[in-house]
Image 1: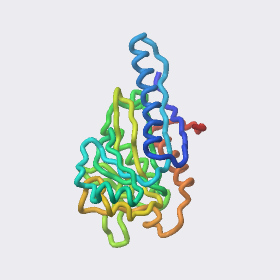
Image 2 (image 1 turned 180 degrees about the horizontal axis):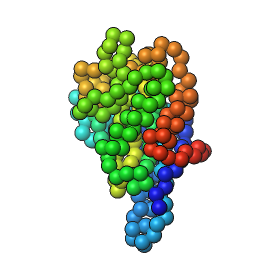
Image 3 (image 1 turned 60 degrees about the horizontal axis):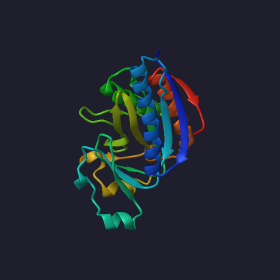
Image 4 (image 1 turned 135 degrees about the vertical axis):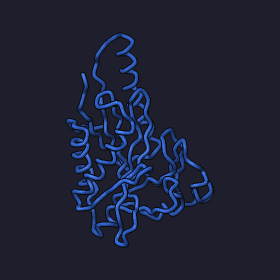
Length: 236
């Protein structure tokens, strides 16, 4: 039987490495349950989790990323107190830091649909729908994964990036939604390897203070709607 419940855990601010380990433990537990079900011909439902967090300043680069898109060297990273990790998700280089919502859906897609492309499109829809609640029009660009908005000059700027890993139809990693980060950190990388488009945030576009906890609630509500799921909030 398919489990359409999503357990939401807001784990607060956590270093990227600790959050990565946190994800991996949940990811492995779900996969182990699937393997056991198949081996013993059981039908114990697998769980789905949405982990919400913020990180300290860090650059991460995916499996297909180009190190040349990091524009500063190791010494400069240390000087600026920015961590750097090569990780097991798709996509190129991006920045994570305070003021940015990291959303890590650890879903068993067997509970929803087994289509990675559709999964990415639905993640984009979650962000586009959330932006609509702030009277902003988010959009996608053919051939790219992510959500963009237009700035006051009509230029396309990315407001949310995505990078995932999947095994046995279980997902991890996910999205980074710019609510009110220090956008200056993007100057030291070529974000997502895209040279001709900038990066923005909800605060920069709206020109007003944004309550990040309110954004999280709107985000969760749109996960519920887009994935036709039941939401359960729980402590970590």
